[in-house]
Image (cartoon, rainbow, N blue to C red; front, side):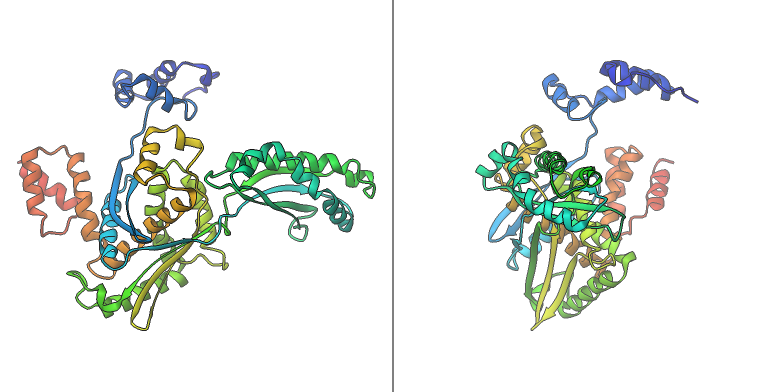
Length: 438
């Protein structure tokens, strides 16, 4: 059993690596070589990456792919996608091409309101708390003027503050519920700074409010933090076409396909076990673009999955229907994204991704990200309701299997020829490789 290490964060990068290699690897030299192999040869660039997080030892690569031919609101976009899962980028590109000849994707930002909360405990007369809040609210907003000045110049800032009584659910628990507009910034640091100032002012003003008893003056702030659930920061994306226009080489009977597709979505609406996998496919597209553009995919994931549960049961994010012989496929999702601040101005590949997208505003990026999610969902459902998901996925996965077994160029050609018209199964690929090498 290894002993804990004291003062690890104070060690140099090389000292950290040496300790790690000596402690956990049978061959320390080989481990160190592997770690350093992924360092960038540009020392300044490597230092930049090192300083993004703490205790950095190396870089962890994820492929950056591109999916071209996305027709969004009448303009073509090439979308960057950072993801390790095979077939995701190919599926997105396939959907983009399919819908480009059928009118493309329509995307609309419905709202851009973000949320932060001051959570506090108050033991006393609720009517006095309401009176105190009514009198103090202008002071709470004014107290943040120094923080919000630049944001207000760009048309953003605090939109409103509400007092919310949650004491029925938890004894003595109340909230200051704040709504924000952060324009092209995701705004996490801005929102949290505002909340902490509001909380400080709220506590301070309570000390001099004449109606409060001494106990009521002692408002206990538990925490002040933004929410990643942003149900009023919404984007809608959709595609539609005549049913007959759905026909292609894989869709011989477009009406049958459309009806089966709609049923597949309805199943995900009422069956949580299916809905989770259904929505995971949507997130394949969303997360890949969010990551490529330097945004927080964990926050996006948490907010979107909460939105999928807003009815009280986890359900499909996307909707499908047939009306008057028109096939409709759509989705509304909450997205809090930024195109300024954070990694967007630091990470070279993030800057390149945003330039590839023609330097979008936060609202435009919301539309692009939502489109990628709907495209991914369409590709998955199209495969599931026609040829099945594994045929295309496993052919894309074949390269990973071949790399795992370090096949030669000659072996690779023979294997790919063999599986051109044969279902790819991991065990059958391994068996074929073994037979080739006998």
